[in-house]
Length: 241
Image (cartoon, rainbow, N blue to C red):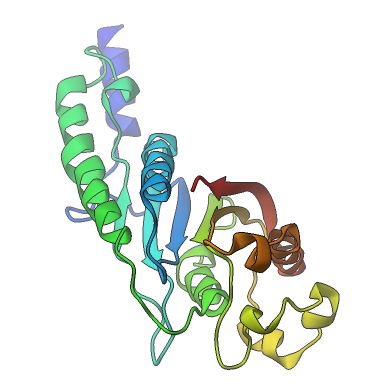
């Protein structure tokens, strides 16, 4: 019986990249796209960090977490702040079919600690004049969510932002467009992408003037345009503060 468990353990183990701890084929991918144009207040930072810590616990063994900041897209797509996979932890094996202590150490050193360090960098506002949220969604969809061979994998996009698009072509500071009319415009066609099969969470970072700039119609607008691109909004969360 011991030999059986050992053989099964060997078969279930995968060769992992030394830097990212990712296998050649991951079981799922979550992209955390963060818009930190404006500084967060103290309650927001704490709640945001609470959500990030919960997210770490939701990434299963051999699943990938990619962190990207909202930024203008130039000659190349946006580069991740960090990419890591969960290599597994003590709960994924027993003393019979593995080494729980070694796996727990690997989980901490290769996944939790690098991600925690990256999360700290997300708390600093960029102070950028523009907030190209839609362009950034398009970028991560192309670079991370539409890769070949990913159709059967769990794919999630988490957008942490005030959801206020602000570029030369489209600025919500000029007023929120009608979503049905907006999806027919050339401006939308430039930034639209394929989100088919992607589950989307909206973590809304509230502004001091949220009653004016972030009405319910704002997240409803995003739900509409995400649905038009084939995605499904599964959660809308207003970050405290």
